[in-house]
Image 1 (cartoon, rainbow, N blue to C red):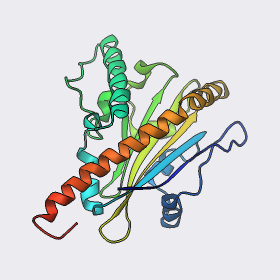
Image 2: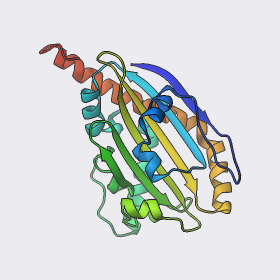
Image 3: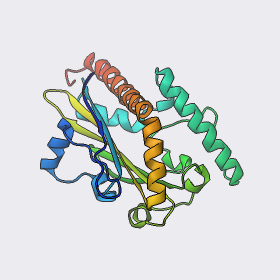
Amino acid sequence: MQNISTQQGESRHGEGQATTEGSLEGQQRSAAGPTLLESFLPEADIVLNHEIVVMATPEVTYAALRRVDFAKSRSLLLRAVLALRVADVRRARRRLGLAPLPAPARVSLQNVQDYGQIKLAEKEGSEIAVGEIARPMSTESMFAGRTAAEFKAFDCPGHIKVASSFVVTPYGQRRTLLSYEVRIRATDTRTRRQLFLWDALTAPLMKLVTSRMLRHVARVAERQCAAQGHRQASC
């Protein structure tokens, strides 16, 4: 695997919109048309993205992405951050009277609803988009059971909308560009100020966590590709 670029910046416009430009993946998809993520959250206050080259085919990479359990990453940082999140969600589910998470908890793109997130859309073989809506510092507010259509239309004050997606793109011969983008938008000015403060405090950590997430997917995909290589020369 090879990190090729990390674009993480804030160029505020108007009340505070932030944009990120310059990534290779961003340049490629701008020519190919909008992503699922852009269709669900076209305007954002903060945009973060990161990408990595995976030494495996897009098919193998996408299959790994769909099944990977991030809680099993070898990264101590990622496991620690996810453990805190799981504990917070457990408390929220208990207070709301929801069924508890299994033990050990699995953290994957297949069970995002267990964590209050919304499976927005999937473009088979190339992109998976996930969203969440919450009030600041209120995990319980994520469990409102909203649909993808409701996410797109939601604009009630006092909330933060987060949309994220993984995109798999062919990159040379038997390689893949795996990218992850997060778009965040506050629904009113006061909440936007809180959002920018939160971002200033946590941006370095989020950058590291994102990198560890992509590396974990890359390792799983490359391991699978190596195993297939013993049987056929497809990777």
